[in-house]
Image 1: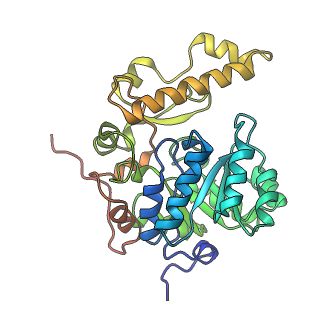
Image 2 (image 1 turned 30 degrees about the vertical axis):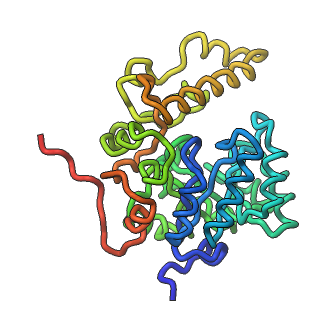
Image 3 (image 1 turned 180 degrees about the horizontal axis):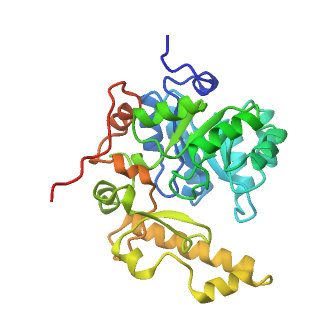
Length: 328
């Protein structure tokens, strides 16, 4: 009998109740294939592929090389002008689940329901959770304040019970898990599984630069800061010398533009575009502009390792802990 018998493992047919979280610029087919072979599942942001042809090629590869469920992350607000194209590709391939972020998921839920595809929605509070439940979502991704990227405001201890009390949907916790103790903590709070991202950035299968991976090894939880200079909304990054030099708050001009009703929309689009370009340059090449997105759970990253070994840290009954502090 599976020691992890939860709604998530039953829903997707998994050995372990873990989703390798979709990470912008990081997640790829190779990582997801390794995740599936390790008994978990994984998801990739559709935006990681610049063309539909490249996106379909990746889906073909996953289907051919791995026998298990996987998902795609879709940005469902108006900023994603490729949403319809990406959704059609997902439905053409009948991917097992879609994780929606930043917007109204109705279009995605309606398209997936008739194809028996699951839809999990990112939520940070009970109000939005109730809305997506009414639309027909299959589960909630509870983004807490320990998550990497765009983190929520509530602790897992606040958010998970709140969602359980206010909806009937399964809750998958996102943030704060880097080992088996973290997984057990979320399951005890009432989650049926976890979404884990940052510990996998430094995996051997990850496509990012060695400098980015080594940063995840060298830095820890205390080195994660929030910045609103990347996308206009608070996002977690590693506090490198470049981040310290440039600061984590928008300039006076950016702040002024964001307060102007007429220019606000365009200012946010410009901030997002510039921020994503900065992330892309830092992720794939050596550059002094080291703006690396990561969450507090890089604390558990001790070395660059294969995905399967990172998964074992998450599910192994032998308790593992964060890396030991260096002796001065």
